[in-house]
Length: 331
Image 1 (cartoon, rainbow, N blue to C red):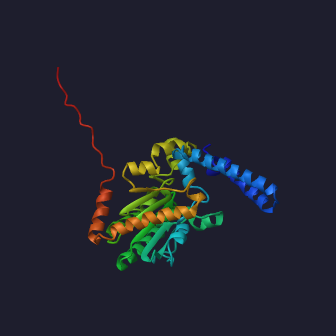
Image 2 (image 1 turned 30 degrees about the vertical axis):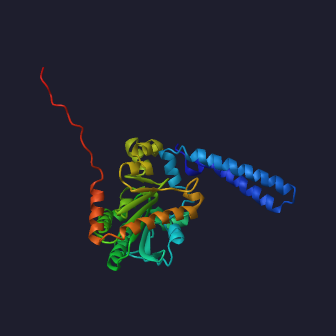
Image 3 (image 1 turned 60 degrees about the vertical axis):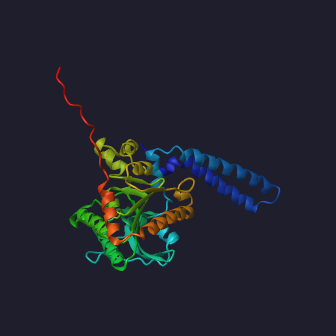
């Protein structure tokens, strides 16, 4: 069985739990016992930091998948709260209903008005059901289209946050045209005459991700993943068992480093020591700096140039050259 995130990080979690207990004891203890405990705390912190440095310097593709799915990893609304101000969430696609797996609305980014759109997962079982585990239905992508049209009409840059295992694959989604909705969202992003930045902050899975990721600049956090299919889904197809997820993760080349190498993303945004889930505030600051820098660069371009650059960027993906064959010779 492939390890879960909690199983993989258990030694580190136990170290941190020990630190919390020691610090609680030190607060209540009197000198010289407090001094002894503070020495132990310093030793534990060094052990934890060394463990993190070693652990995160050796991350393989499957470990990247686990980190991208970490329970405490920041989601879209966490980044919105940390990076933006005056965010007003807008609901509904004006055609069917509300989808809570995609959130969005106008906000200010350092006093710059913009439109924010992103996938939203849940922290507990109730939230996950409410958000459909971050898997958007057709109305989610049609809501995104409505917000993009509004942004284009008012000249607002669009910032999207990508974090979904995939779009919802259920019968109801299929009956309401999930494939068409994703394609229409991509098409709308290509039509926009305003600057667009997409940030892959967790899982960038399949068409569910690309539906709101066809941006001028695509950024990707250091430990996020970006793939045509989740590893377990790939394993179920190739090996008839999801337990081969680690092997599938390796074959899929889904890390940020692979995505940058293949030209699928423009920049890797570094994460705090031990991943974004260990210091969400620092992670948000790093994302904000990268997004602002990209938007400032693009504000100099006209709408037509932005649209053409976006088109050419995605047209260039996947190009390859066949090795020339030597002509056959006769003896």
